[in-house]
Image (tube, rainbow, N blue to C red; front, side, top):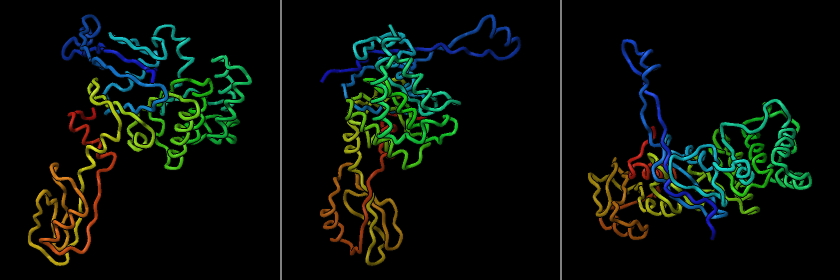
Length: 332
């Protein structure tokens, strides 16, 4: 399958002014200002195939937004090469943006005080979309997102979920090949989140749209993506499927056991006792011990009388927290 996004050794540095302190600091800041160089991205290399839904994840300050701005042509990298859909984003940007759509969860591309349909009409003019194509696309988006009651209302009168639906529709009116989504479900209620996720999957399947998703909601990542790229401190730390990450950590199980009588101590080879009180104990299998329910029951009943047990795996958020800890990256 052909790569539609090709990032090669991309670096981006920023010069940040340092504020002098002490006597005459104002004059020093004005006439002899010193700067600190920050490496936002360090030799970032990755490829994305056409039709992929990629989760681009990492803690705050990791370099996600800088990467998105380079991919959308807003920023020029300090060094390295980036080719997206056969073009370099920051060169001939007017032509490049015809094939991309961008949705920022906390910013709007639609006009605040005019009806949504007027914003859509203006976008039609900006992208020079033929009327017949525009009407056909709008009808499809309207059916998928249920926009009928929203199109004739100003954006300021809509709820957060309604605004996000309109933002998604606006970003897709020109049929982009690549869609960048930055926190598209932030602040949305559970029902609207599910609707937005279903729509993203629908567009990906219907138009084979390549989607780059940045989010802190790991349920979005689990529900939508076929690949994740983990970035931390400006460097790519992991590329691959989220399933591989889950499988790596899903072997860790927490088992709550109810016993038929009180026991002073609970010891079971291959398991760590997390807590123990009277007839209840919480165990966790060690990394070297693969958990199998039947084997667990056989092993524990050799020494103890049990009534019941309950097994839980790590949540999606806990998996991500372990991943961050493993790569020694924290939120800044």
